[in-house]
Image (cartoon, helix red, strand yellow):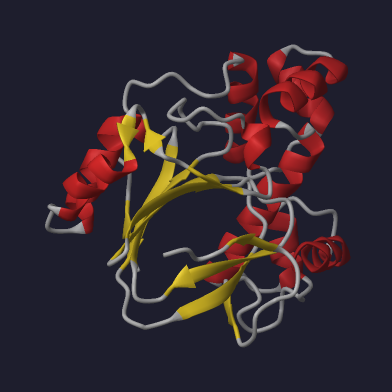
Length: 261
C-alpha cells in the first residue's frame, strides 16, 4: 500500500490518500472495522473503472474485492466531505454508494484520465483538484466545527463540553448532528475515539492497555475493552485485532459491497 499526505490546503478535509496495486487473482472478502470517515474509492481493472463512497461505518462489515485490480482511495475527515455527488451523509452510513460521476465528471472520463497517469502521486493531484474549491456537503458550519473539535480531541469531549465549546444547547447540537450527519454526537464521538484507539494499537507506542485507555479518553481499561469488543467482536490485546482481515469463506451477513465486473 502506498500512502500519500494531502496537499496543505486540503489537510482539514482529507486525512490521507492510499493506493494498492493488484497482485492477486480472483475475488476475496475482507472484514473492515467501524470508522467515522467517508472514503471515496476508485477501482481500476481490466473490466473498467468503478467509483464508490463508503462510510461512516457504525459497525463491522465485509466487502468483496477484485484482487487483480488496483484501488485508489481518498479518506475524508469526519464531516468534511465536499459536495461532489448527489448524496446525503445519512445515505452513506454503513453503506457503499456507487457513483456514475464525480463533481460533474463521468466515471469513464475520469478513469481515462487517471489511467494515463504514471503513478499514485499523479492520480492524487487530479483527484485533489476535483475536491478543491467545492462547497462542503455538511452545510451547517457549527456541525463542521464540532466534528473538527471532536477529531482534534480524539473523541475525548463529552457532548455537554462540545455543546459548550460551540455555545449551543445540547438539544440543538444533537439536532444539527442528526440533520447533517445522520447520527447523534455521542455516536460520532464513540467512532472518533475508537479510531484513535485503533491508531494507538497500530503504532504500539504504549506501555500497557491501561495507559492506552487513558490516552484515548476511556474511563478505564475495562471500558476500553468492552467498547472495542462491542465494535469489533475482538479483544484489543489480540494479535492483529485492529487490522482489516481477509476472510477464508464468504460471510453470510454484513456485506456492504460486492464485486462486479
